[in-house]
Image (tube, rainbow, N blue to C red; front, top):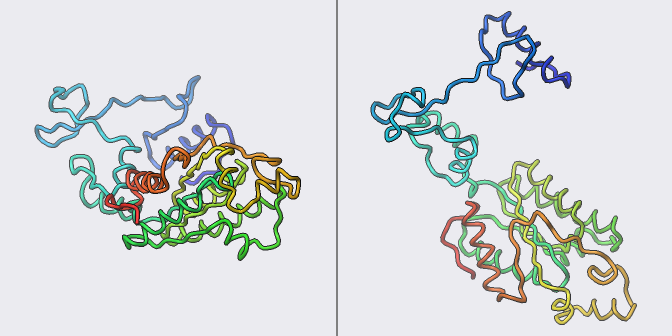
Length: 293
């Protein structure tokens, strides 16, 4: 019943029970705290289990252990649906399973945002391009690569490198990526994204769009990134010619919520690409048969 909540769980439950009783309801399901001190009487139901002797559901304690199958937990059902596996008929009637699959299609048929974050020179863009090439070659998904440098030039031109401008840059990338994923595409993004709050905003945008979100932290150490310094930015920052360089005079907030961590100083680019592809396969976002291009 769509009753307005009043912030008091016990009073809400009492009101819901009173209205339900007026419609002839005798019992209500509740997932909240047990009520005490009067009002509705709380009943804790006995646990049901599936009896494989005759295909019936009975009280768990009434079934011999060898014939007992417990109900799947909600997270187990979601995992089966996400991976595109059929729900067992002993648990879910085929007609119901079909509707559940329609409401929650497999992950490989849903959109996802993969955000690569790390210092300049860590290998983010190179790894992301390798992943994009492998996915495009397979032809299983529509891929959009949002490279940090290209986005700076085409989408966020005019923004500087202050904290506010960096946050705006990541938010814009996150919005575009979420729109790609909303339409069942896969967006690979590789900005530096040094601040945790901006990364969290990008994650929230993807989830709000009904898509998945994977954070890949390319953890290559600063000293290795400085040695590479393909753009010469670290040398300029050390010489005082530029300011706001992440890792030198501007902080990088190391992710604590990364789904995958890669250090390209300890592995080849091909191994890093394969690590991302393996994660995508294991979590059901792509078909389990990809290799780096």
